[in-house]
Image (tube, rainbow, N blue to C red; front, side):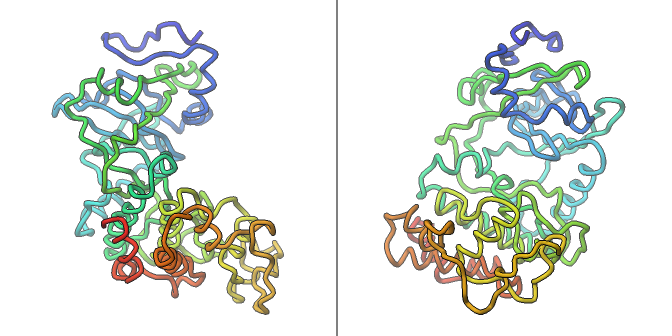
Amino acid sequence: MASTPFPTNPNGGDFGDFVDSDDECEVETDAEPRMRYLQGLYCPLYIGEVLDSRYRIEHKLGWGGFSTVWLAHDVQENKAVALKVSVSGQRGEYELAMQNVIIQTVRDTSNLVTYQAVFSLRGRQGSQHTVFVFPVRGPSLDTICSRIPPTFRVPAAKHLLLGLKNLHNAGIVHRDLNSGAVLWSIDPIDHWTTAEKYQRLGRPRKVPLSEEEGIPGELVESVRFPPDLLRHPVCICDFGLSITSGTRVENTVQLPPLFCAPERLHGVFPSCASDMWSFTCIFAKLYLGVEAIYGGGPSMISRIIGMLGLPLPEHWRGYYGDGTTAHDWWYDQSGQMPRTDILGGYETLEHKIDRLRPEISRDEREHALSIMYRGFAYLPEQRITAAQLLEDPSFNALMSYYNV
C-alpha cells in the first residue's frame, strides 16, 4: 500500500520515501495524530509542495498541539526556512498578535524566535491557517537533551535566562515555557542542496493521508538532527499562549503539568514568577540530563513536596484543582512530612544531584542546589527573578565551571 508512488508530486525531484506497512507504525508514532486532520485542525501538506509561490517543503521539523513545523527552501532568497503552520481558527492570529508585541516591545530578541514573514494558507473545507516563516533552528531540548554531555547542555541555561529576562522586562509572560519551547541553534544549512540535507538529516519517511484526512497530504517522520550540528545559543519559541503581565486567563494550569508552577494548580494566574518555576524545571533538566519533576496530577505534587521537603503554603488549602481533592498533608505545617528518600517513593534534590551528577565538586553541588531551591520557591513573590538570577553569585559561579 504505502510503497506505491504518490501522485501529488508532479514536478519530479526527491521527495523522500513512502514506507511499507511494516514501518508505517513507526512513522505514525512519531508524526502528529491523524485525528487532527480528520477534525480539520491541521492543514494537509506534502514533501515537494510549494507554498505561497516560494517555499518548497523539504522535510518535517516537528509538530505540537497547535501547529506542524516544516523545513522548506525559499526559492526566491535561496535559503532554508522553517514554516510553522498553525491549526485552523484563531490560534495563529493570536500568536501573530503576540509576536508583533514582542517585536515592537522587546529590546533584544536575539534569544527569541521571531517571524521573518507570515502568510495565510487555505486548508480543507475552506479553513484558514496562519503560516509563520522562521529562521531554521535545531531540535528542542526535550528531543535531544539526554544525548549530549553536561559541558554542552549547562551553558544553554544562561542563553535561555537572557531571553526570558528580555521578555519579562517588556512585561510579557511566556506562560507555556517548557523544554519543547527552547530550540538549539545549528550550523547554517542554506548552502546545502536537498540531497545534502537528506544525507545529513535523513530522508523523509512518510505515509499518505487518506481522502477523508485531506489528500494531497502526508504524515512525515521528523528530522533527526545529529548532535554535532548543534550550536549555542538556545532560543525561546512558541508564543501562542503568551500574555502581557497581569492578564487574567480562563484556565491557569499549564500543560504539560511537569513544568507548571504549583500556584497555577491552585488558581493563581500565570506570571513572570510562574515562568521562572518553568525555567528552573528546564535548568534542572539541562543540569541533570532528566526532568527533576515528572508525572501529573496529585502524584506530581507529592513528588514536588518530597523533593523539596516542605509542605505547600497553608493558604492554598482547598484551592487545588477543582477544590474537591483532599490532600491535607500537602499543607500540614507541623513538619510531619512523608519519607523523602528513593525507597519511600520520593527523592530529594540532594539525592537527585548525587545520583545523576556524582562527578561534580562539593562547591558546584551547593551552587546548583542554591539555584534550584530559589527557583523552586513555592510562593511566586519569593521566587528569584530572571534579572536577579543573572546577577546571582551561585549562578555565575556555576556557569564559570562550564566556561560561560
